[in-house]
Length: 228
Image (cartoon, rainbow, N blue to C red; front, top):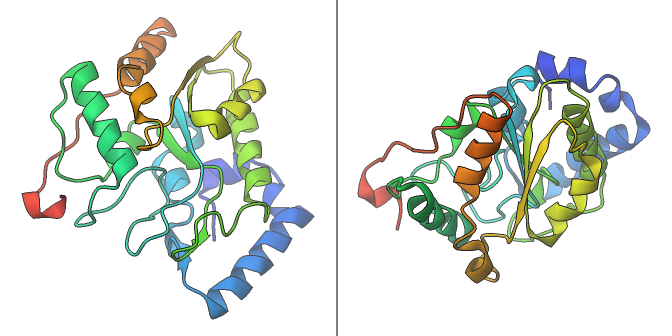
């Protein structure tokens, strides 16, 4: 796993710390006997698509998708032709209600990442079909360091924390410089509270208030068989 240069510089010696070396050894062992998602080259996709200096929004997820062909290193995102997962479907429904953006036929969120939305999971790997299987192995320490380093930037950022797990991270953010949007998680378990929260317009309003360009949340549509 290799961090791109901007993040390697920003995170200093994080990858040289004992916990991260232990995490790397653990992952190497896991991959020799188990199927681990996402594939190793995609673990740091979020950092590759959103350089440190380009971050305008940090959206925090929890655990990568654990079914075949889903996780590719961006929280909530799936590459075509993968079926759109339920939480992402709910995000798209709310996006349509909030901003009138048509529901896309693909769950690929890379266009958001390329605009400066860091789509970060708290844990970056998972064993196939075993949710939370890499919890408490060291990833949380690393991704907390990512949040802290983004928070330490001079340039303002909008942090988006959905659900109880993510909202615990709000205390790490200096709200005198940055903005926070907190809300219910788009999971079917909490979707009733998520619907109507208008997170996408709220994020854009916060960006504009910080004199930053809003995000274009629209996504290209692909052939309808890509999603059901």
